[in-house]
Figure 1 (cartoon, rainbow, N blue to C red):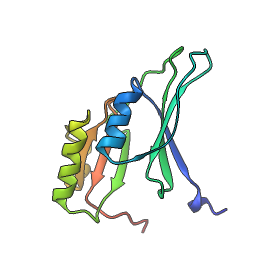
Figure 2: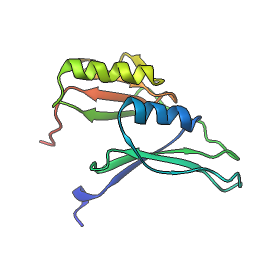
Figure 3: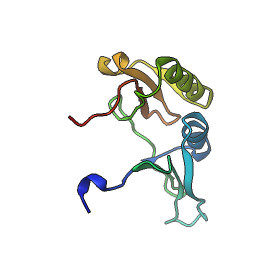
Figure 4: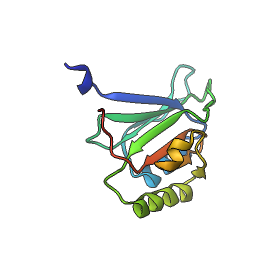
Length: 138
């Protein structure tokens, strides 16, 4: 396997899987790829995996009822989605949909992201940037 073909999983704790699902699935439009509800055992976790089925990444949102880990995001904990194929109006509509589903539009800590996108905090305070740019690794 070439390293560039590896799938990426971003795992984060959440306070509330229902609120997280509302934001990421109903708000952003990710699909639920897998879920597991905790049976309450001390070593069991509730999980929600969300992503676009054809993407090489997905989110794993975790809640451990017996021993919860609280999210501790900083203003630089960003998930940036490059949506350059969408126009600015569509990105604004997506940001509005995210706010209707539990997000909060915020100014970026780094002004670069305000110039090239919109930043929305999820219900746990992690930041999602909807970038108006197209990804290029060059």
